[in-house]
Image (cartoon, rainbow, N blue to C red; front, side):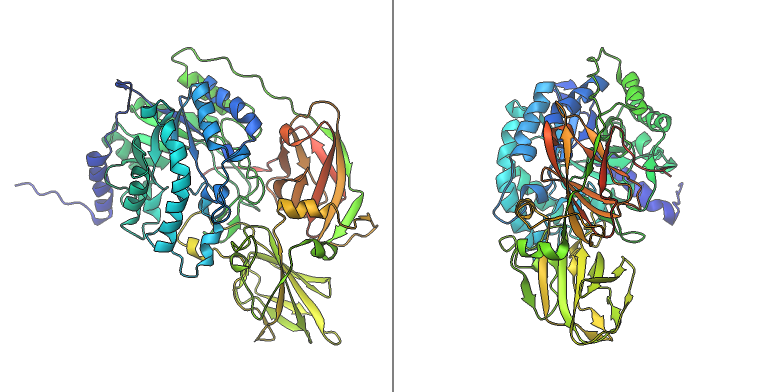
Length: 604
């Protein structure tokens, strides 16, 4: 008898192989004919609605036959009982447009989606429950999922392939094998979809480390990867035919990083090998787009770092929809059949700089916020009594209290994520992500201590999702005594506040404006608006609004040095330019015809 001994370090690998062989044989059929998915990820919430069709036609012209998209719960249900499925979030219109263009659809409705979104696309109001256990069968979570799916899924059921629509498959959750804290959870998600009428092929999607724990009976397991390492080659060799659900065409960037790039030849070589093995593939991302507003997430490891506004991803189509060498190489690879003509590139334009001519300090803007909340102890953003009892979603929170002495101000690791500190409106320092102590100068009598705390983005991936409450989450200490009696202002910079702000008593720009503060200027567009890029040399850190539309964050530390401004956000004629700046400003905003994503580094 021959006995085979397997090293302990290899047992898990072969267990995964065996599991895949049993569960992952995949030979999709469309109209009873074998069909290979050549997919590309394109997110409707990251691309202006006016450009949806342009991006889809460019996908089609490259040889893509299937569009994949996440469905971010947080955007569709910003408050309990409030659902948004219109305008930029009109998912039905998006999927019907994909069908009109001739693309099949793989829908990825979460509830958790990751996608480098704030809290992985989960609504932050879930965290008002101090016992919340996200991505589990905890009743507070499953009840909320059921309520969301009651609204979402009936909109999707008529768009399934079996009913004449474009949806050929639906993904359950996202990379749950890397989380895997509840053995019953994936079955709950599956039943939540099936019971509401989903009847197409079900998928799960996991990276190499999560394959063992991420699946569920009745759903095809697929893999996510970028470079074909030896263990990946073993998997792909033994598991034919299979699908690579996320082939990462590039990567995302964090503030303070370099811009990550993946050489086109290296990327296409892996795609070619995947196709040679007879597998289906989805390119994540085919077109990345933009994290408009405060939607970007953050990483927790090796240390906290927020994600930049651009989601260019070094994808085959750039953030503004231009072709890249990756696009052309892929088109050559996919062109076994005659492909449609490539749509023309949209014109980019530089405009005259906007000179900021009015200014409003943070302190003068406070009367235009919602009524402040008073509390003996600090209250985190999510538990503030704002937004109809749903807490503060994004942005900044101002905490003020009275002090009678100077000394050592200690954060107690309670500041999430960054705080600018003032005494009687005079700047004294910043609590960065790792700062633990600031010196408060001595003074006479009682003085006002103010902390402007920014939520820089909730972590989107990992084991700490339940801990992503923002603002002051616990006590802070002056001379080792916890501070008390706070007045708390919610500065989420939402559209209603921005509208009110235009009615504030703005002042002519002083020679030495105070910051944090708002600056107002105008951009003139002659004729039909074109795409452009907002550049802010001499500015430090803040947020840009164009005609009330939140473009997202800028930060001088980079890598990103320009914000994408799509033409549809502009008007012919005069456009309002509003900038919230935290520290210092040049007071001139530039509009140029090219992006600047910063210095690059190859993905390792």
